[in-house]
Image (cartoon, rainbow, N blue to C red; front, side, top):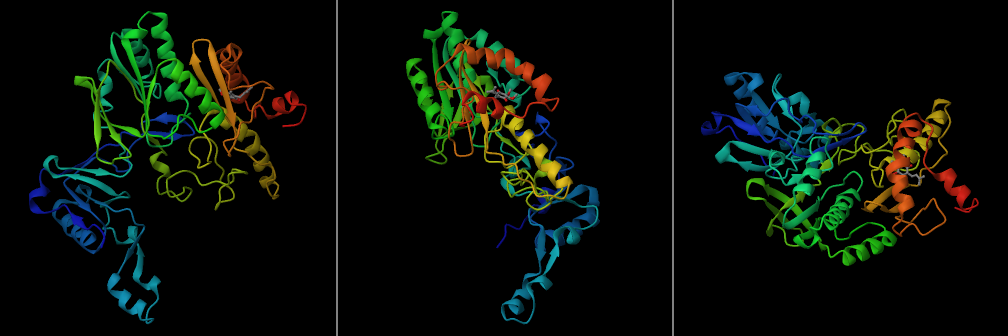
Length: 432
Ligand code: UQ1
């Protein structure tokens, strides 16, 4: 049985039902933005949950009562089935296809179909929550308070610096969500910078620094994880694994984390500074799109970057389901491969050049130190320079802070930088 909950019992008809806005940052090839929602508006006089027999029938009736524009149906399935026929399908007297119609074709004209799944009901507030509303309670409103920032949005990145400077005494908490994120190293880079800043300004002993991560490891590549764990120990930082930020009470400076090993069990931490890495996901336009996989990422071949189903569609960057870390360095390497793939496809030939998953994460561990992580699809180091890159180096800091911006604006964006593979070959005398 599907969850056919028609919210339109009379008491719910007025004042209507509100859809909660997603708090999730959207990833696209255009960067991060708080995208529009999956429904045209966030309030309906009648909101029908479930597009089965009851839901579609009631939406038709409610449309006649309050007008099509005031009714919406939340239903994730693309197909509506006339299930009474399944007796005959099971008995071999009818084909399954004869019981199926596209959901869009049974939706009353003018009624909005919200292609999503209901995840929670709040009848006291006349609200429902939709899937993809992976939202941290209290955010983004909480960003209006001081002491909280996020390097992941143009609107909040400068608040991080303010909170860092205003720090007096207490917990400094840095979070990592339970979704894929852009540059998985960034949530901890800001922590190392903060630690260094407080040391420089004589406040280090006043700060209890915590990294609360949803993951079970500090970094996905062992060589760099080992180096980072050394730094964490040396700098007296606490790492709490499997902790997911679920609520921020900004007025009280409290952050609430769910213990992912004990679902439903939460812990409240007081903070003097909070750096939030928000949950991230594909942009709404890609969710349930024909070009997307079931999670909403553009479904491309991991070697050629050609779409798995539509040969004239290609994907690059954060919006794809390429199983590698989402960084500018990854995009650089992908751009070189995709150029070759498209050139061949345009000549009706099969793509030959293969992307190995190359990505790079310059792990900033201080104001003059970087561990330059570079690795492939197998989480194996794929380093450009013939030195141990898991060591903190000042040269790598200058590369990150001074050279990379130049390379980005003048070479990558102009289509002349396809990643460091040629440099790597040269540096390793053609052996890597
Ligand atoms: C890189 O190619 C790149 O794209 C421009 C980055 O993004 C800004 C990087 O941070 C890094 C490290 C690379 C890799 C380049 C070299 C020379 C190792």
